[in-house]
Amino acid sequence: MAQKGETLVEVKDLCKNFGVTIALSHVDFVVKTGEIRGLIGENGSGKSTVSSIIAGMQPASSGEMFYKGKPWKPATMLEAQKAGIGMIVQEAGTIANISVAENIFLGNYDKFKKGPIINKVAMISEARKALEKIGVTNINPALPARHYDMQERKLIEIAKCMYNDPELLIVDETTTALSQSGRDIIYRIMHEMADAGKAVMIISHDLNEMMEQCSTLTVLRDGVIIDNIEKENFDPDDIKQKMVGREIKGHYYRVDNDGYSDEVVLKADCITTMESLLCFDLELHKQEILGIGGLSDCGMHTLGRALYGLDEIVDGEVVLPKTGVKIKNAQVAFRNSMGYVSKNRDTESLELNASIFANIASTGYDKNNIGPFILPWKEKAYVDKQIKALQIKCQNAYQPVRALSGGNKQKVVFGKWCADDADVLILDCPTRGVDIGVKAAMYQLIYDMKKQGKSIIMISEELPELMGMCDRLLIMRDGAVSGEFYRKDGYNDRELIERMI
Image (cartoon, rainbow, N blue to C red; front, side):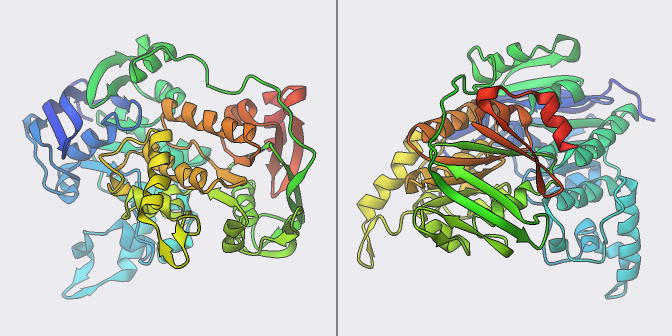
């Protein structure tokens, strides 16, 4: 066991520029053995940037780093990995069309080679051990990664990272992709590493999670370290104030009890899917925020996809009562003024390699044209309006979405549907992985949409935001509604939780 309290990583005067944008400005901090160091701040504050530089994903513009007392300037993640620094990235880190085993040992196939031939049997056997090491037994390492959902793929990444027994583990926005059981796995790993005299750096927007799991918090704002706070000094209001530069209290939730129209704008009539849903009924009213909550595997995410025509409905139908249109696929939904914000933002709601402009403009081709021709000036106004209204932090509209922070990516997703002026919006975990400032903006935007007469289905694993934002709340369990509750009657969190489990 390593000695606790020794300096493992030291960062001195670290700077990083992207063109004229300053991502990090003269950053200094130390990570010690036995420590769980949390990095917290608003989107774009520099948290992921400094972590990715330490892990070899990108170089610094200037400054110095030291690892185990020696100068540290990794050229690649593989170099960092071999030196004992492992990172679980925010974005998808698996390749869908190769096996789980091949994903786990990507870049390390040589250990299974006999001449030019890779011993796949040995690789699969070793991959199974890697998964079992972190407590995962329900993933078959011989199958392609595409067979598994977002959470299971993230567990594959964790197994890959931990197989190499890192001395420093960097966890970048990983817990947002995990259910509670998945979070428990990563929490256990983090604390086992700290107890063994290793170190952990974790990035998360969940302040409660950070205060509970971390021994030290480093607060960043606009690429600058604002403070380093020890656990005994954690205070949520103080941390929020340091994150955003102004006093923040509460959760920005609604305080009104405004009602909604009797008019039904979307109806699900006894819909059944291949997975999760059996004869499910739902009605959404004009100017209503309808919340759908439950445990992560209750079927609510499948429901959102089915309502928008993304998952096949094998029986029953989704109808727009006013026109009688049946939502048979996503194209029909889009043409009938429906929008969908996916839980899996980076793979389903955005084209990461395309520009902000291209992503937002994608919903407006039928609004910015004359006949077969797009009007450039009209399209530019369509996009610029959303960048300004949502305060998307970017160099310009032609910056690739991949280069944006998580919160600004989410703003681009909302921008698509705000620009399209969709009448019905299905939001699946709309505030996942964004900071408190962006959450506030999202909540205000959702409430503004309600006041404009829009109808919203809000699916979330965060019970407080459902209670804070929704007019009516359906709790799901095992693919069915286990309880229906109304804002006007007041929500009781204990009763809601009882209906979930």
